[in-house]
Image 1 (spheres, one colour):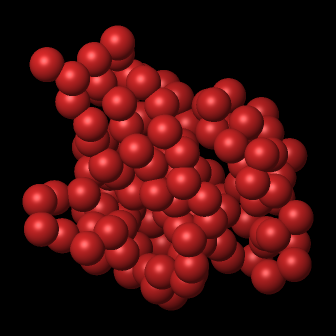
Image 2: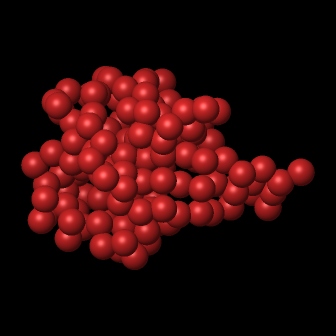
Length: 136
């Protein structure tokens, strides 16, 4: 039976850099770099879910600023992910990773282009995320 999962991700900005995290080697998609976030729990508002997921994964408290873009992709022939991506601001840059991730970077555009998963980079370019990082 086909499944649709709704998830949130945060483009957490600080000093024209954003936080990217590397999925744990033992996890699905292990070793890939992405923005923090995760699945929305039943009954949860997207912004509240993002705040919870970011705190669980990175230890950071964030403010959700605004939606950056939405995306959709298949992870398997019968599983679709609907992704809501938000710009966020962190109170601090002191990250404490959960077991879901092995590493993190406060990355500038050049570092992001080298590290982040190709499908995320495609979305960043499609929705002009890099110019928005400089202008805010």
